[in-house]
Length: 276
Image (cartoon, rainbow, N blue to C red):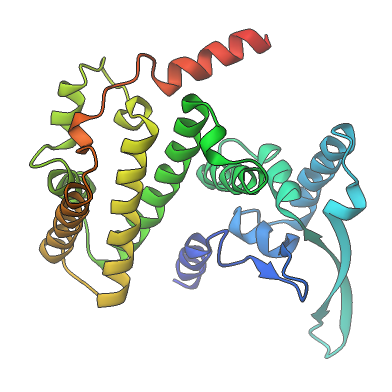
């Protein structure tokens, strides 16, 4: 039972809430906390991943000692003594390299790759105007934010009592898209079998969905909403309110946005072919 509880607690750790801020306002993560979040039991194996990440950092012409700052962590011994353990203060880029070199079979590694890619991209966008990005880059950026938001919303909704996640998501879509479910959107966009509707949205349509998702998560948490029916009603209500706001401001309704000529999956495949 203790192992099950411990595993559940580890799963609930998000990359955002293990982030630290130093006295100068700089964000960082501690390697031993990241180890738990990425579900590595042994430090020895995780340290091997760190070494690979450090090599990648060096080969990318970054300063390794600035990205991976060695710090000592004190651990209590059974006899009452203490011993020093190696730990690292990691910046965002170091974390990104670690998850890129992690075990790809772990689901949490994929989530980490998305999270740190999005966060790294956010930092880049603080230096360059978002409006100057080409539409394709905006789509990739907004899709990643939307997917990460969906993952966090699902965690909150599951803890609050949602069992049928498809119905929960459809409640939100129906509110935002004037009654359309995910399947209705799929058919309207004339997508092929198993295509992802998020990969076939323009950046503005993705933004509308990202806002719906984030506001639903906040509503559930702030109002402590519990129970499947109440949660679906809350998601539907938020979708409707976002739709009303768009209409009031004279914006484009989500269903009226044109479907891009190419999905993001297609664009990713083309990019990989060019790299090869």
